[in-house]
Length: 406
Image (cartoon, rainbow, N blue to C red; front, side):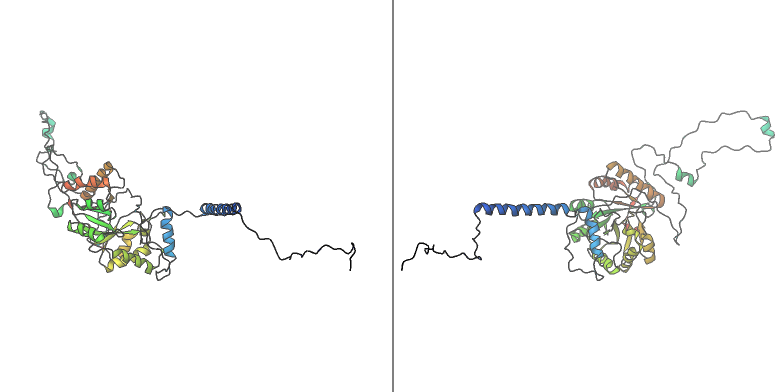
């Protein structure tokens, strides 16, 4: 059967499925483009993170350490506590004040300042006075009922109190004046060297100085057993320099510092850690601590532990607000305060002036406590002074010999 032209139809092509989509393939140019976009995003995010990140530097170390310790539970333990890091040594500004010794009687009441009579090894030169002119006596003087006042004779001696305030006049013989008194009665000087143990080279130089000196070692120094043994073998007395909270958060006192506001158990943990770092010491003094030594509650905990261990306390007096004397008396701990920092200014001329003040204080009250540090200028200046101080009539003593009462 034939079909007409009208019946002729084009073959129907199969329709594409609606679910079918052409495959999306990346060519190398597109791949490089998307990689660049990803890298740019990472760089922008990192830059924004640096801008908005809180800065953490040395100034925030003490503040953040204190915050971490205060957030610890009452048992003093923390599972997330960071490992101890190496800490740089910082120092509070050393006070330049000179503290006079209070002279107390047996009941602890202050006595009037004693006057020291200085006897030199050489007699003072006698100055001859010109003879008085001889005049004829008046007739009225012969009939006067008042006898004439005899002139002073050369044999008349000045009173002891006049000698105490009068300057010494010594002939220029090339020799230094010395005090005539037995070694037991000579004015005593205790030189305390703080911050020992960190700088091992200068610590070794300090140990070689003439003594006996008082060597106070920082508790977080390394190699303490070896260093303290060397100091003890050289005839020096050992003390412990415990870091205590300074007044400024910008200063880092070191690890295991004694902080204000801690629970008693946590504070005791820090105290006992410090006290166990080496042995053979007579007492402790504070490293920094201008804030902690003003906290009576914290000091009472410290003094209680010192009393149990029969230890003494030396207040470095880094602040005028210290209450260490009161806490020590309450606990019955032997107490002394320093008189002078010999190197509050790291200058040779200033150190020499301070050493002269040490002599003056010792002459005035019988003893003086001076604190120095293992600094270059201090070691160079104090060495010659130590060699000649006993020839001047003074006596170098360990610090513990100056403690007589709590």
